[in-house]
Length: 193
Image (cartoon, rainbow, N blue to C red):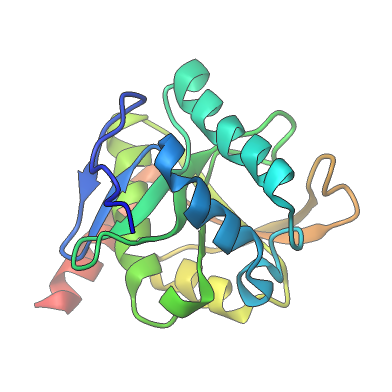
């Protein structure tokens, strides 16, 4: 397997204890394809996608970095160098608000990676992007994502419809303000000790 780079020319690299988060690079395509072919991972994320569609999705994320200065990060395990998912800030046209969203391969779920990466992305959105409110759009049936949002200190603010191509979906909008995140972040740090 080709070792994935730890940096991208599109934006910053964030590091956590076990993960490297950086904007996508072309070598991530195999990981993106595996993710979009993973039934469990895609259950609440629009369903399975073919490689030509995945190619467009990945390049949309890269385009977000190029045009907006932010986008979802590729999540790389430090120990193996494997691509395990994507997580980070997004705000597509017509979206309910600025979001930190996540999705990991099913083999990487349940190991605390999403929470570890989400904390780094919440910090990035609050501190570097200066977002006043950060949301998470979560299908009401997605208990693991709801649990992660709750662990981050978010609560359900309202329900909303997403724009096309998800206009038929009604989601719970979890979220918190930047000030609330600073308090919740401190609680997370203190609970880790």
